[in-house]
Amino acid sequence: MKLINRIPSWLKNKYLLTAAGFMIWMLFFDDRDFITTHFRQKHELRALEESRAYYQQQISNTKKELDQLKSDPSTIEKYAREKYHMKRDNEDLFLVNEK
Image: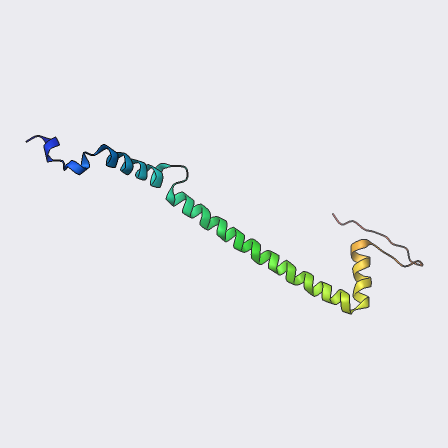
C-alpha cells in the first residue's frame, strides 16, 4: 500500500493544514507570539506596579509636608528659605554649591 493512502482524509484537507500552519506560526514564530507577549506584558505590569508604589509614596510625603505647612508657621518659613532662597530684610544670604 502506498504511504499516501494510509493518511486519513481529514489530514489531506488543504484548509485544515493551512489553518494549522497559521496557528503554529502565530503562536510560536511571529513577532507578537503568545510566549513573548506574555512575558513582555508581565514585565511591563511589574514595572507599572513599582512606579505606582513610588508615586503613592511621593503623594503621601507631599500630603504630610502640606499638612505641616498648613499648621506650623515655622515650617512655612523653613520651606521658603530652603526652596526659594528667601531671606529677611536684615539678613544676607550666601549660597554654597556642593559638587
